[in-house]
Amino acid sequence: MIRRGRMIFLFTAVILATAFAWNPAPARENFPRAETLYLTGGESSDPRDYDPATTRGPGDKLVYSGLFSFNPQMQLVPDLVESWQVKDGTVFTFTLRANAKFHDGRAVTAQDVIYSWERAANRATKSDTVLTYLGDIVGVNEMHGGKADHISGLRAIDDHTLEVTIDAPKPYFLAKLTYPTAFIVDKANVEEGVDWYKYPNGTGPYKLTSWTSMKEMVYTRNDDFYLGAPAIRYVDVQLYTGLPLQLYESDSIDIAGVSTVDVARVSDPTNALHAELSTGVDLCTGYLVFDNTRPPFDDSKVRQAFSEAFDRQLFIDLVYSGDALPAAGLYPPGLPGRREGLQGLPFDPESAKALLAESKYAGTDFPDVMITDAGYGSYVSPDFAAMVAMWKKYLGVTVRMENLQPEKFLDEVGAGRSGQMWSGGWCADYPDPENFADILFHTGSNFNEGGYSNHELDSILEAARTEPDAVKRIALYQKAEDIIIRDAPVLFTVNTLSHTLVKPYIQGYVSTPIAIPIERYLSIDATKLP
Image (cartoon, rainbow, N blue to C red):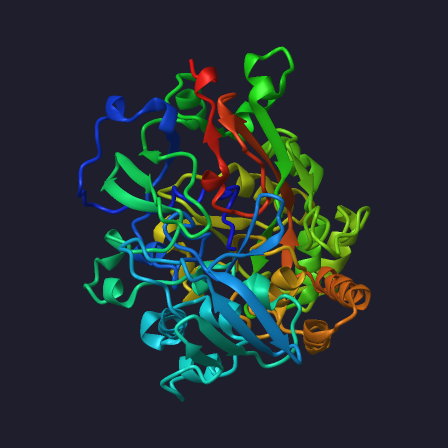
């Protein structure tokens, strides 16, 4: 999952909005307090964020669902699937749950799965994620490339039985099906018109029943949910109503993420909020992307120099108030393959100067360098201000800064209309090093933003995809990480921590490093309500 700056997706229900309203929800005072979960969120102006096939985030896991998901213990569990069989590691036969229904009551069928995945693979949908998350299925690449009208590796045996053939035995394939690209949509709903997503007919634990732009989104429990109806009847997401911590302290919301500036206060054992604080390590790695195809970062020595002129601990102290971990490499804490004590490229100003002097740009006019951020106007983020100051101090290089509108940032960077560096990062979609190394750094990958290419690395990653021995497979990913660190296609910055406040009457909350529909696992203890 793409990560920008320090934005971590804590809840699945807060990513959607647009300029409309329908089915006005009852006034807040009319919601039964013991049956309503109050959250806060923001809006996106990009319609692509609303469509499971095109979102670049965690998707709306309250409205939509897929064949598999993760539970709060981060175990991969069947969702729409009741059972499955595997032949030769490549042919999967899935039996769908007989009681799985869309919100309008229609049964979910194997044909719905095929429609949803073929729609994602259709070039007209313009999905940036389909090749990454469904590309292992035979025929997806051909359909996406316009060489076929259907995905040849999909076959509906009957209404509740689906056969899926993938190109090679891959131990992470089922985990990929938890990503929104694989979620199931209703064809009739989609074909209602361009605004279909405003009235989604999903399969998930909640129905989106009210959406008032810039104000509120209301989800209502799906009493016919195939895994059992959630305990909480309503989820009320308040949009742009204030700072989360202030809303939490005023009892306007029940769960709130804690910003960096407030961590010290709520972490103080003498503070009343401390008992309500849940802390964890995100499965996220922050980094700065170098454009490996343009001067000066087409030279690995320049990339290494910029990395070694970066003081991570000072950066964390200045920007995160000390509340983050230095990222020496690609894999975050808790991910298989992570090596504690990994050194990475050290902070070494003298070595950085020497590397710059050894580069092909030594003794010449050093190319103009620009760093691009997602922001507005002339605002300079503390992250970039700290980095630019370090490079000036330790390398003598002046780096200019520019902002691009956040809603256009990814498209502009993808089109090459940016500086030679930009903010980046990745949060795990599933807990496997393939989700980081292969997706981000294999030559030609859709998410290889900086255009990095190393054929030795490609060979290792391709071998790891089908390695059946778990120990050998992890060793391959660690070897891949060593190459990535050495070549420095990105500058690794931090592994972030998450801090969340949860009201005492909210039961069942678990801090998870991957976005799951946690709301459906929660309940409210009415005896503890204020």
